[in-house]
Structures are given as C-alpha cells and as structure tokens.
Length: 357
Image (cartoon, rainbow, N blue to C red):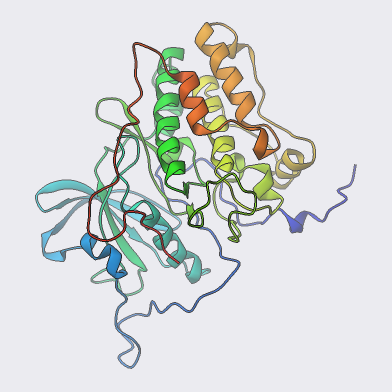
C-alpha cells in the first residue's frame, strides 16, 4: 500500500547504521539556531578559541598533563585514544569537524557535556573537556573520560565467544536500566542507546557512553510531558530509534526505553534487528509497528520469559504506554543481586547538571 505521507517528512536520509564497533555517533540537530563562534585560530581577526562556560570551568583540560598513547577507534564524528591524564589512564575523544555538516560536529561536542557532572557506576564519567584541541584548530573540542577498557557490548554479543547466558543478559539489562534511571532522573535523554555505545568495564560492568546525541530536558520537566522539548532530533541509529522520533514528535525519556528494548533483544538473540532497505524498514516501524521477531530463544527459561515481557513492553508504539527505567529496574531487581542506584552527583564547583543552552 503506498504511503499516505511522503517518506521525507519523517525519515531523514542521514541516519547512521548500527554496526559500528566504537561509541562514536552522529549528533542531533537543533530546530532553533544560536550564534556560536568556534573558529580556527588561523583567523587572527576573529574571536579567540572558545572556552567552556564558567560553570564547567572545573573540568577544563590541563594540557600539560595529557599524554596520548594509542588509538582505540574512530567514527563519523570523533576519534578515541587511550591516554594518561594526571597520571591516570583515560580515554581521550577528539571530536572531528565534519566537512559536510560542521554545525553537527559542534553540537555533538556540546551534547557530550550533558553528562559532564554526572557520577554513576553505569555511566562513563567525564573527567575534563576543552572547546579546542592543540594542533588541530578545526576540531570543535576534546573530551577526557574514564578509561573503561576497549570492549563494547556490541563486540561481546557478535564476537566469536559463546552467546550470553540468560542470567548474564539479565545482569547487563539491570546495569543499563540502572544507568538510564539515573540519567532520566537528572533530565538527560541519551537518544543513541545501542550495544556499541555500552562499554564493558573491568568487573563485567556495563557503562553507558557516547552522549553525542543526548539532550537535556527543560528545567523543571520530568520527561513525561510530550511537549518537554523543542529540539528536533535527527541523529542516532535508525534501527534503535523510537517511532515517535521518526514521526517528528518531541523527545521524552521514553525514547530511550524503546532503544533499550532493541538492545536487550540483541543480547538475547545475537541477531541484528532488521535487514533490507532502510527506508522500507523505517516506514514499516512507523506505519505498521514493525519490530524484531520474538523467537523461541526467549521462551526456554524463566529469565528469558522475563526479558521477553520487558522487551515487548518497552517497544510499544506509544511512549506513554512504555514503562520507565525505574519500573524496569524494579522488575529486574532480585534479592541476591542488588542494584547500584544509590549514587550522587559530583560535588564540583558550579551547577551539577552539566546543561547547556
């Protein structure tokens, strides 16, 4: 049946595929514009190299303490290196200036800093940042993060090792839900949750990383109001993108729950969500509620059936019908494996929300 709505109205053509192995994502696009000066230092008559806002001055990079060791990976909007900073092993991300969309590169950098002041065991911690990069005047900025190893959940799922056991899937699902619960309480929506953006840290801990597509909800909003933001989100990964975002509707935290469902489905099935033409898939997701197939692999154990119920509830078409991260965390909570959700915001100078306007 032909589409009653032109595909171009809700299916942007620059959505990135889902198979990248390092957490470097495409950014979001703003529906409102603000003057922003991020100009190379080669222009002496222009403003100086931009700096972080005063409330984030505490995390400015001391470049004399940085030593880059080796590359870890790269994506469309950034390169990640293993480095040392003040004697500590860290991951250093240099944001690239995209020749086709320079504004998108800058937005990706500032979006990353939505998590600058957040501290949680299942969220990658940002240690320092700079709106410049020595030796590369075209770079919109540099971010220094905790080093959580080089392994991602994507590599663990699709690597040569054995499939994840159901108990391990439940544990990882709990880690991710715990991190999302913390982010959503702080008004941050990730908007690009997928296995490639979940790092597997020492101790077999999942840590949510790559906030280059994230948004911060307006101050005072709880994320449930469908009019909570005026930002128009065009980044992320099409296989994990909630149908309301494809329709151009406002962002809420429930968009992350849809992505969470697809991520959990991948852990259990060890398959990729969709095959075939991207535009056809996206149209079917919106118009016909297409979802990845729930197979028998979810029915063999009690843990598998529990995960099946979670997946099916989290990828419901309407965001208001999906459970919250806190509800999923309670559902996954067991007496012998407690959640680690009692964490605090960093007690750094200035505000602890890490938001930008």
